[in-house]
Length: 263
Image 1 (cartoon, rainbow, N blue to C red):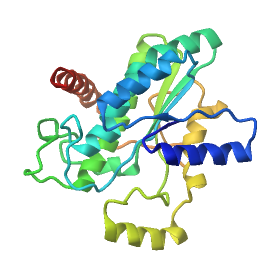
Image 2: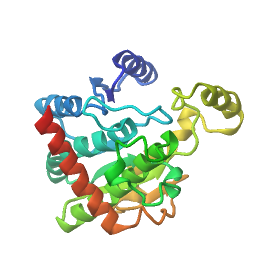
Image 3: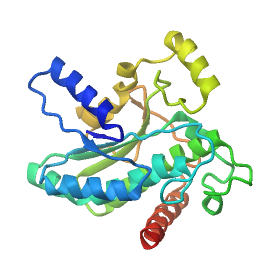
Image 4: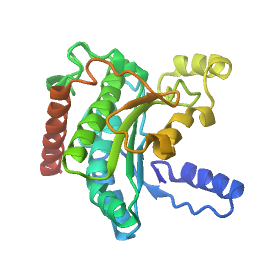
């Protein structure tokens, strides 16, 4: 289990082991907003020589005022997309090896959002990722990053299928879940917390679709799809734009390379 907040991660580990004493849970530090942290995590994980069948990319910040990451990338895009993109790339060889040796399908799951239906007009603002003077809006920045999650999963699915690899890549909307995702937006977080306990999903309910896509036999062999409420759902028009997906893939690789050169 990868966690930015190690204390919180250890609390979750303790809760899991308390409910299931036979569970084997490791907590490793990972800050997806930092490419250096992603690389260190991948290196540490590789050094453990562990198998990897399932990778769930579940980073999510929302509504944070304009801010740059340690790599000078807008924080929503850095955390919700670019960190996941790099992590997946660095762990993919381990997943391929595991799938081959275990003869079991590997699964990559990107936790996105139904909000991807309503992005900026151009979908991804490639030339304005860091521009907070040209109509920047923190919620649209979040939506942009969630659209990127779908585009990443769809393009990855295409590439894996093309290579004949027994690994699927899918994305999903977990539902509106009562978490602290709006913690940076004080007034909204207060309203969300008050109303949410009556209208929204709890954490266990919110994890249902993620667990379904990651584990259920009915999802075997299905790739490049988007799920909601444990069912295949329709994707927004930008999400199924294959050219946009390819462009995002190349843009992400170039951005990571530039950050590596500047670090």
